[in-house]
Length: 101
Image 1: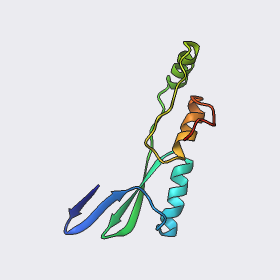
Image 2: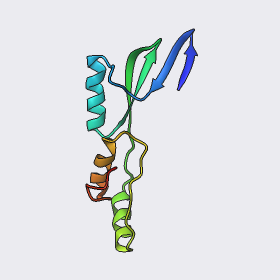
Image 3: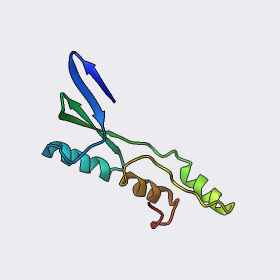
Image 4: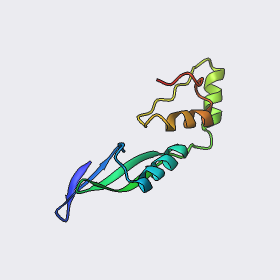
């Protein structure tokens, strides 16, 4: 997402490799916590990292278990970066660990 705020170009984007040390550390922490990180750039300079995360609903594990008993093979589909998906899967036991592509 891009826009002008007080004549400054503000962008909210997926992180890239050009992050200052402090934001790179925040990126690693966000991914470890199974959150999706986004970077805020102001006039082309990375200023902040926002970690967006979902909370699993209390009945999620039970729902996956019931689907399995019905013969359904649950699949976790996500648009997130690669690292949150396996961590979410581990908490739901949705797919074999070799199910990531």
